[in-house]
Image (tube, rainbow, N blue to C red):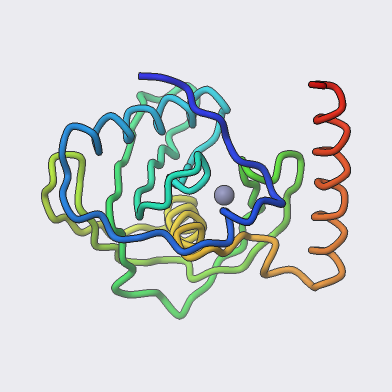
Length: 174
Ligand code: ZN
C-alpha cells in the first residue's frame, strides 16, 4: 500500500468524467488499498479515484467515527438507483478543496448499486452522512465538485483563493 498525491482544485482532471471498470483484479484491489490509505492519512471520509489522478469509477468511503471500529466501503461503478424526496443538509468539505466547507442540500436517503472489493454486485441503502458522502463521491466521477452547488460568486471566490494558494505553494517548492 502506498499514499498517493491528492489533486487539488483547480485542475482540469477533476472536471473529467471517469470510465466504467471492466474487471476487478489485483491491480484494481491495489488501487483500492492505496486509495483507502491515502484517505485515512489525509484524513477524510471519502475519496474518488480521480482525486489521485485515476479516471476510473471507483470510490472508497468510511464514515465511522474516530473511536469506532473502521468500516471501509469500496464501491466500483457505483450507481444511484433511488433517491428520497426528503432532503438533508450537511456541511461538506473535500480533500481536493482543502480548507473550504459549505452546507449542501441533497436527498436524505439513497439506494446505490455497486461492485465490491471482490467483484461482487451489491446494493446498499444509505442515509445520514453516508448518503451525502456517497452522492458527493459519485459527483466526482462525473466531474462535479460540491462548490458547483454554490452561487457562481462563491464558487469563483473559492477557486480564485485556491489558485493563489497553489501558486505560492509552487514557489515554495521551487
Ligand atoms: Zn470530494
